[in-house]
Image (cartoon, rainbow, N blue to C red; front, side, top):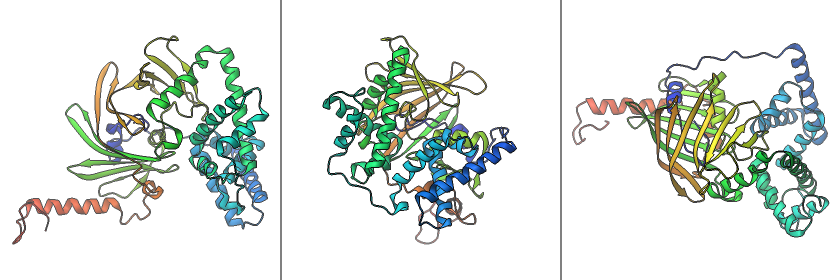
Length: 443
């Protein structure tokens, strides 16, 4: 499975096995923290609660504990690396303090303090703050251009923060903090550009890719759903996929018009539900694969913020354009772009056991600002393994967060309803119709 919205690929062979009770992926050995890590994690949790208590002096203990849990969940969504540092007690105290301030800025309801609304436009507010950084932008025109980059970057990191800024709800202190971090990132990028030509070409290519395939940050969708089929040899699988920013996914497997299995990830919990069976949580490699697939945007979007390294793999000016993306965990992939349209033509990913798996993209169609591939071919070992075809797409369908959550009621849920429909259809198909009832319909 790959990410949305520029590609709408789903590897249903793996997912079908997960949701209908087929072969499971071999469980990966889970490491357990040693005693020092456990003590460090406990001390860091206490430090987090002390920071929240100092920022929220009027809040009861239950609210502080709830805010600590919400902050941890928030960190898992925006920065898995930082979340791991927190969970193992290795996060720098200053870094933790800064992240808590940003989190509270995104949740003004916790502080009960109204944010300062500025009379200037968001772009002008940012440009004015950038006057303190003449090494990055010396003129008003350069500062406005840099402010546009800041708005785009902020939207990639936190859609809610961008919304608060655009609505004038972001305080001056929080905006100053975010602009300062942005300025330091820009300086670091300039230093890398000076010493590494393969890195210097990347920002321009990524900007062209986003403009051609995604459109402006403020106009990009918050959620999307699509349906399609995957053909693998003589097997055909139907599916419907729902995704929502920043990392929620739910997949329905369809057979004879009915949902026979569901698999989902709500940003923290991966789960599956098969027909006639209670919902169950997923762990190990299965959960990790689903969590990776839940990321809404293409791997090129926001690569700096999540700590990934992107380098130009092909010679400068060569066709096609190949970019190597190396994530913070060491996993690597190579994304190939058409140099004229900047549409993605293929994605190769290094397998854990060695060798590359490749997905090739074609049949692009414009859907608003989105440029979507409706046909993808999955190759391995030089052979075509499966072909996925998208049939319908719906942008911003209005999905609620709870739609992606682990089912709350194990005794009766969505799958029980689908099972009941299957029984009714079977009875209607095999039983004699009653008076006035057409043959083949349910009583």
